[in-house]
Length: 101
Image 1 (cartoon, rainbow, N blue to C red):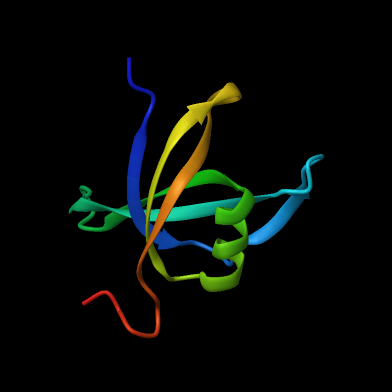
Image 2: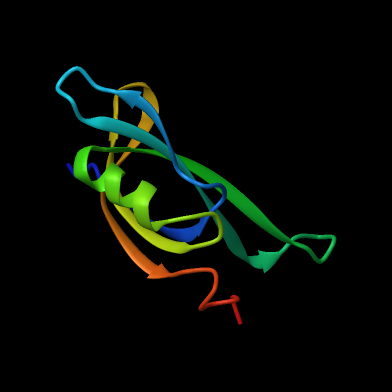
């Protein structure tokens, strides 16, 4: 069996530290906005918002380098209570250099 997900989208908000773990690492929660490829019955593109947890060194880099509107790719796995744990984040474009066109 495979426990893996892959997502690509824009950060819906600036990542912020939510918890210091017992071993000194940090945990960050990020929300990714993923626009659907098709319009709904009203002619509007809907957007899904997916929340992921990020730990340790990856979390520190996300806080340091990413901000709302940046496009990222996320690979990870499901953990207990149906949470998503991001194990790898790829920085695809920042908001200043890519306006989505």
